[in-house]
Image (cartoon, rainbow, N blue to C red):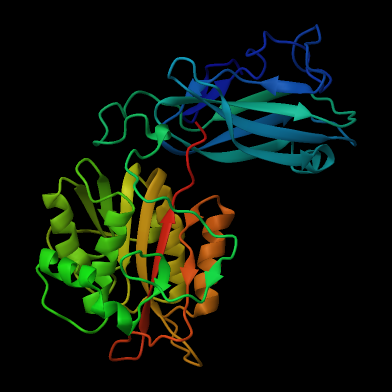
Length: 392
């Protein structure tokens, strides 16, 4: 196969042209003369990739090896002059395992506009690896069809430019301190927060009547978090997952925010006009490069597992540094309600987000405050997170 060829829309890249085709540490590959790096296996040139999730496939022919480890690294290089390449993702695999798997391995990564991508291979320990040929395929090369994307998608890799209060994960993940409505974090809804003047002000701005239950806390909490963390301003590109929060979407639009409305996992109801029904498992799809995402699940019947999965998947719809604010049903004690989160479920979501590099506002679960609950005895828990920052 020749570099530049395509197979089922996959682009074939020359594995050795970035450094002028030096000999590879994998016997039989590369050029005739060794290069300056004794660990060098291969390095493609940098190419533009269609926005979204893509794969590099590394395919050896007749790979032979008993010793050694192959380190694969995907690098991103911004098109902005003077930029420096940074690693996006990496993976190690033993050569003997790779031989058993047919000499082929695929790495998944997320591509942004305004950057180009390359894959390189290194062998940092002793090896006896050899091969007859090496092909590297890219599944989604940029064909220029995304040039006219929606507002806010140009140079997505640079991250969101909207940010106010810093959001940092504490070294102590869970605090027993009382949450304060004016300074929202990842927290329970409590009856004392109903007295906050900021909540009353949001009810007025949202055009909502006074409500002492969860409905009187949920939308004001979402609005307070969105404003505090810098997203209640002109130019923000947002996505709502919950038709029940339409007054908030309308208020944001009045402030110059562009709102994409997806009725996600709304299986038991027909979405109102202007809302697109969507399964969370179909995300991100084309729904990329948002600065803000929010949702409220307290009134539904979805299982906790599905809500957790949705929160995780929709982080991929954000630009680097983008903000996610979610309100989920919450339970304490011996309740077995499958639609509500207990403390362990909240911590699993938080740990999952942190493990993928995202920032989560400190978790506050007070023990000396009365929970705000609905008619079924379920409370609410707000989760605030920022998507992992760009590597640029």
